[in-house]
Length: 348
Ligand SMILES: NC(=O)N[C@@H](CC(=O)O)C(=O)O
Ligand SMILES: [Zn+2]
Ligand SMILES: [Zn+2]
Image (cartoon, rainbow, N blue to C red; front, side):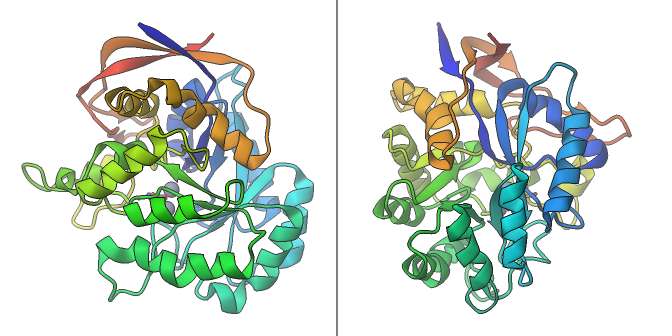
């Protein structure tokens, strides 16, 4: 059996820079037509000039003949000036602005400390420019239980934000809870949407502790209870246009994952399409897969759907145990060493 799909895009991707960029970009470019590239580098991509330069280095790292298109983002800070948003829109290469609450996740130290106090002028300009705000939706108050951070963020930041700026386009990234599903479903289509990762569709929090601590299953927002996983699966397989593919593929070297203070992030780019196909197949909803992978994202962003197609072939393949980096070191992918059922062929 095989499926032919309009070429998918990845609406949430970490490509990093330097050696890591060289190592990972081929995996994303092999399957996806475009990707929204996250700006949480060190230092973060806070200006259009930096986004343009980062885009150049991504294009340089691509295999020859690849027509993969990176869609760049700006990293919102307390000091982002509305003029920077205008510049971003005018550049034609920046497609969204990313809101990291300061301290919420990897490289978020320079993120926002007070959205309503500091960022309203920039957000109002984003409404003007029809520039989406992409949100890492977790409360950062250390007293909030880590498993409740998404829900508390919705109640304290996201709902008030949408009430204040109903015309702001918002993507709640990597949703992990039934609360987020309900919230997104309650908002108007075309103004609020969500991306969903393979790990939050296929794993629950038991996967963090199965047979011992499993650092390669650690990402933020952290995996949740089974009821939440099921709610997210129902949402994406229902065909609701508000949900679309965003892998959140977030490579960290093995030594940084297998460490006394391990980094958050799962490297899933090599397995993402196989993993999504598994979710839809198990839900008996393969007919809804293409909208999730290839239609809902571009429709939300107001971009054309891709013209080319890819094939997913139903045959077993073994995920490599690791990928070796040119400069030494390794990346361990999601489902390392395991067998998956759907094999993504290159473009047809
Ligand atoms: N998801 C993660 O656990 N990590 C991401 C950051 C993010 O998307 O929050 C990273 O950049 O490593
Ligand atoms: Zn995030
Ligand atoms: Zn991410």
